[in-house]
Length: 179
Image 1 (tube, one colour):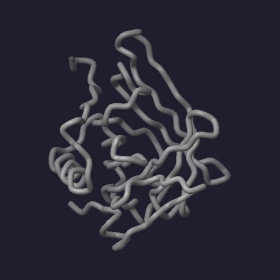
Image 2 (cartoon, one colour):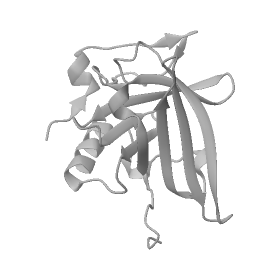
Image 3 (cartoon, one colour):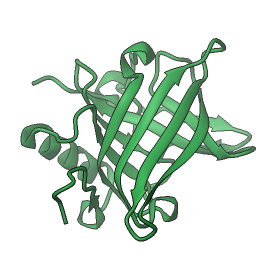
Image 4 (cartoon, helix red, strand yellow):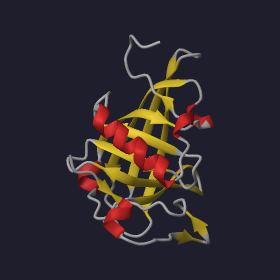
């Protein structure tokens, strides 16, 4: 199965700065070309590196929709198993270098933005590997609650090759029966 990878598509180092802020780790490349209209919809989190804002959450999803101005509305949702309730966070994302590249900056907290970079995606836009602005943030997403082993392994291999510590991944629980 073919998977688009930013480094292969771009073929060189790409830097993104906004007020001298880098939104993608050095040596990591966002997918180009990128098709936002194929990316929108509901995604399930398969795995992530630890983030405080996802602490105690399972059954995490993200819903993306395109706004009239070209920005992306993001609604993250997860079940807090300690509080026994669903929690939501709404944010806004903007393309850093144009909508044909999977490099965005996203904010859930007012004027503070963080990198959200699609660094690998399958041609059908069903599975994605997302890099944050540093090697502390990474997600594997799927438009289904599971991901094929072959794709999962290729994403893990790519993440490791660019510098992510995949041994620290937290595997999200999407099923009611998972403990």
